[in-house]
Image (cartoon, rainbow, N blue to C red):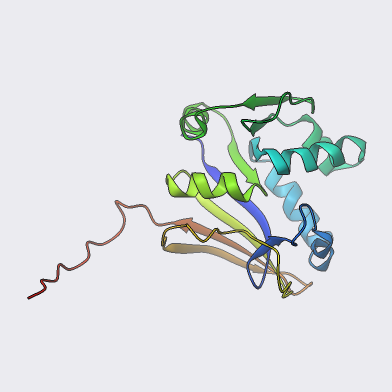
Length: 196
């Protein structure tokens, strides 16, 4: 089975964007040569990108006009956007999926190929987390308190223990953190307590 990995930049107080959609100017706090090299390294093991509608629309409006290695990667890699409301997906090499998100992602994971990544897409990520579909959560922790914004992890998320795979400090003060979610089968049984 292919792995499914979430990749996001997140502030110290847990936001992945500001209060307005695509308010991500704070990414410059951590972006630089190290992050660019990490993204290029990451791209070599990537088979497809998965997006929710909002992230897809932002990416599709930005990357086609950009130049360079990362732009070439973003514009040519297979992409899947999950949306009930989007009418069409014109960005090069994109498939639109309107229904059965969980089952479609399970099908994608069963196909041969390289790793699947979800960029941004907090609502989609929340759904995939709830169904235990992520094999890894990769976060670039940004040395910034934003104060308010859109949280990466939603309030309705259930408790989920993580195993740290890697912590890579950056010269910018950021840290790339790689976590593996604990599977239900990996979790130790809780002791039963009787209430008298």
